[in-house]
Length: 310
Image 1: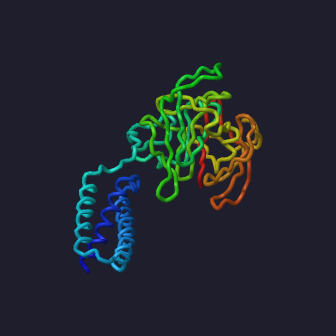
Image 2: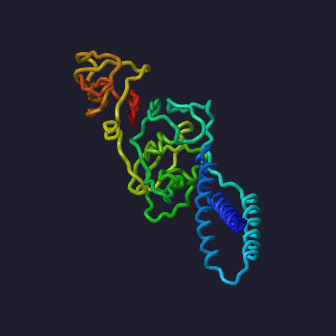
Image 3: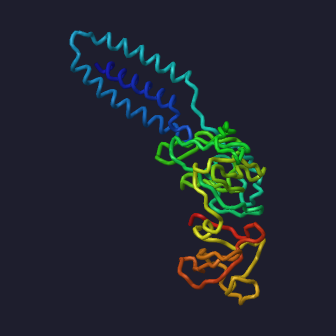
């Protein structure tokens, strides 16, 4: 009887392990993947023991050795399947670490989710920013050069991004093009931004790789567009750049009185007026200590760093 229950547990354990491997559970979880597979297989194995007890109680004329023989065959089959089934892999974001984006602030390797939460733009800003609709199963299609005057044009996608849910309820890209380099990405906070170059009723032109200045189109109803004025006042905070040093002014022009503050302050964007941004000046404990104006853009270039997260 002990052999029967042990065999039942091992059979269900290895079958569960094969199913977990086949579905790719834990494929994007790094070192935690092995522990996740063992956990799921163990839980299912315990459930298999419960079923085995019920079968043992309810069995009638079927000899126990025949049940053990069936379990042995299933165990052998599950071990073989577990061995020959290829491991499901996620699509890597193979950006060389030594290659620094023309957008200016990061060099990275590995997962696209691990980019910084700040951005400096040292090229044309474009019209604004675009966020795709991101839900599990959603596909964002990219198109090349649509005929803007045609209303019935059926385009063949040039490429796409496929979103799916993670094991822990978050969101990830199940598939993404190798060349993808968005303006900003942090999927654990549902943030994925592309620079908008041109805006139409049916299509929006995006920069999909900022280092190569690669542009493609998406359907206008596939996400949300926000212009730079609206975006910058929604940022958590902004910072004055070393490459464009400036003082905080009392009015939105360079000839106005300079407002002096300590360097260790937080600038919270409040109001936009042309190239100037009215900011609340806080200390490091977020206590307001003053306010003033800084120049945030000039000739289509961003002159400050923005932070979307605290």
